[in-house]
Image (cartoon, rainbow, N blue to C red; front, side, top):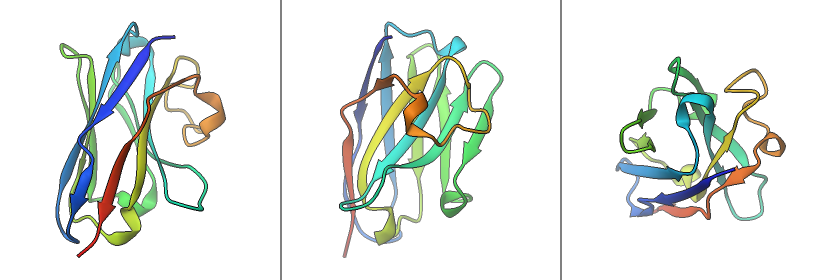
Length: 127
């Protein structure tokens, strides 16, 4: 199933930017869909963005469209989430997850379809 390791989280002021990284090992990104999820304290885990690198299929939750960009460096086996104009409501722990069936299909935002998860990286947006 492979292994995923996130990095890049931190504390940022509203309007600031962060770039999260999700490094994959033992997983061929050409045959996977990789999704960033986030979970705020006391809230359910939310699908943020999905990428299917082989065909560059992209998905975003409405609340981040125009602010977040997902991308892949296949040579580095890494999926990135560039987050701009961050707002306090973006605060949470960000996880990357991978699966090899739906591939960023219509159910990409459902956490239950992902068998492989990273440990998460915290993002705090606060002044």
